Length: 189
Image (cartoon, rainbow, N blue to C red; front, top):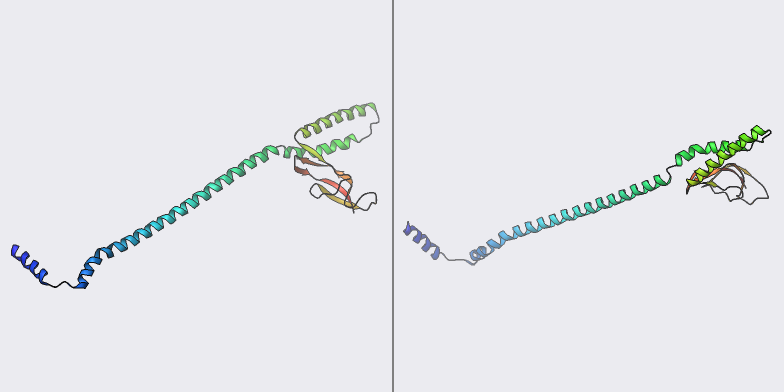
């Protein structure tokens, strides 16, 4: 066996080494490393892209969460601010009826005492509504504002300016800065 190894060694030494063979031997390890390096770069680029996408998704989710929290806070504040709106809306027709009843002329002592009691209840009701932030919308003599007035009639009167409220048929009310019921008015042309 030892003799065979020596013969093969001698044969390899006797064969001439060509320039191509030596270049191939030198480039072989470099060629094997190049695809591995390109694959590594592609993998790195792919991972960087995935990381960037994940960061963007995280930032969007964080922004959505902040917006959601802010909206919830605003909703809580609005519900606290306008918590009595439905109750006030239900009480306004009763307030109108009180006002109509108080306009009745009292002819005898009994009627006067009933009207006096109704007036006390009316004032208490108005006072309680004012504490909650309810305001009467001023109408007569003011310029017509479609945000707070509802025009149901028009008239032409020289005593009033154009687009000025002449008469109020039903009072309007605001709760803080929100219109609960607009004033029903007659407007000068």
